[in-house]
Amino acid sequence: MSALGSFLADIKEIRRRARQHLIAGAITPNYGGKVEDAIALLNHAVATEIVCVLRYKFHAVCATGLASEAVKEEFAQHAKEEAEHLDLLAERINQLGGRPDLNPDRVSARAASEYVEGENLVDMIKENLIAERIAIETYRDMVRYFGDKDSTTRVLLERILAQEEEHANDMHDLLVSHEGPPMLPPRDRE
Ligand SMILES: [Fe+2]
Ligand SMILES: [Fe+2]
Image (cartoon, rainbow, N blue to C red; front, side, top):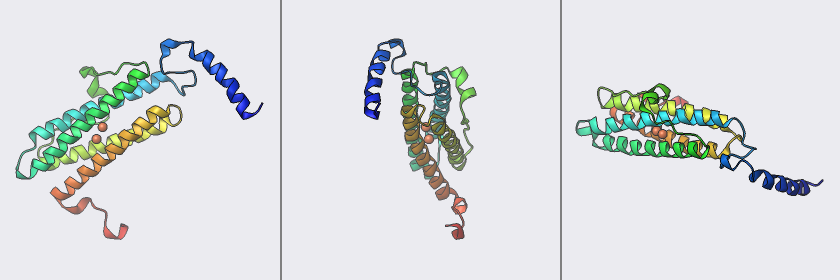
């Protein structure tokens, strides 16, 4: 059978299957991988985002000193964006037929990033940079995991990953402007 012929024959079979298992909603039989694993992984990311929202919010409120106004604004903006990531992940879990786990008792145990208050402005910036680097590494691993198994989730994670890289870059720039340039690579490596 030609490629077109077999595609058209497949369509009949796909139409038949679509009428079955309506309870599965958007999850069709050709979903790659295990949907329970996908939901569990996404719930880890949910926990990480919650911790990031709380840490940035604390920093946005508690950063003090003349030099801190612009930094406070940046922290507040990041808190807002982390909350958007949380919404996107929770919506995706729901689409996959799962339940976003927002239970505070379980959140900190599951989060990859840590809630560190920091003693001063530079400490706060450093802690955020560390948390962003953790987020970047975990999202990059998740993007690889989802690959072509679940391209919708992968694309969502790629969008979030790109924003975490911007966040890390923002924190790096703030650190350099508040602590001087030791974080920059030596000239001969540029
Ligand atoms: Fe985030
Ligand atoms: Fe971030």
